[in-house]
Image (cartoon, rainbow, N blue to C red; front, side, top):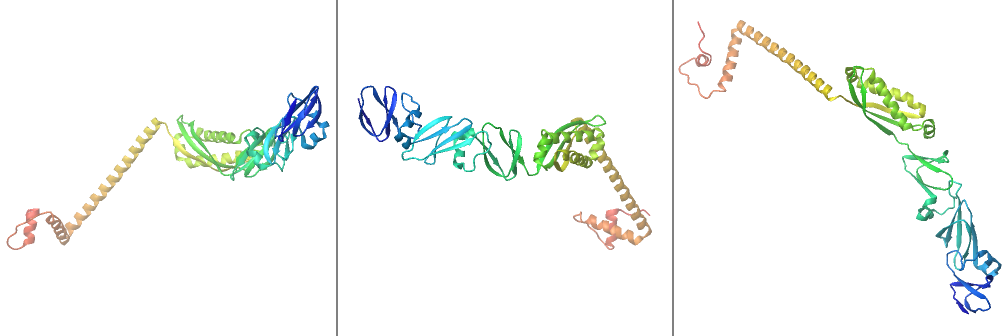
Length: 369
């Protein structure tokens, strides 16, 4: 039987199923139970059909010279690169590759560790094929990251992008905001001491002193802070009447700040500000208070009006007394009013002398003798 082997293939000569030697490119004839099995020279692991364990080829010196062998172990991530380009991920086993005109590189990552080797190529982190083995953590300039391996704190990460092995150990990066945080506590329905239900909206500004201790001291420090704020508000409102609460909003904010500052230090939280934003009354109570307010303002307006009327009457009385005692003043006042009246009149006909007396007589009438 004639077999032609080109430059992109190699042949393996078998006699009655037993490997004899590897054949280079050329033309061969076989007989007497001999056969040639071909395999392509490419980047894939060497295999022949029917399947043969490649270990049997190691007895051939030519095969050993033209190939490279690697073994992928369990518990490792073995990455195959050809001429610096990613080729594949190898499952556990023994592999042979042709090294003709190509350079093979095998990167090994211990899956029992959380971090990649320092010389691990960065471009591999972006490959979709490797994503099941990579944990990516992006930390902004206003954050830090807490690295935990198997639920144990390892180190603190500054802003940047990090990659960790997603293997046999549980690796987790907790992102923590280092800037000032605000917590809104809205719609808190609370019963006052005089049995009136009101709603409060509050805001709390805080920062974390020590993230590691804060996370280890309580299960969830944000939820704990929210609960403490609720309890502080209820304690204050429950001991006050509605009228006392309305006039003491600033006192309530001060109480909330002092109460939270004291308690939050226990789990390493620094309270910067705490205040009551809104006190919302029920609709019926709001209508009643509006009615009371309108009545109060109307009464105040009536008092002011009466006070002005009294002052005006007193001023008129004083003016009348002065004019009664002083004829000249009376005459001047009379002329002032005549001037004002004349401004409103079109024409007045007067004959003879003493025009001022006639004008006064026309406008005011004659004095009774």
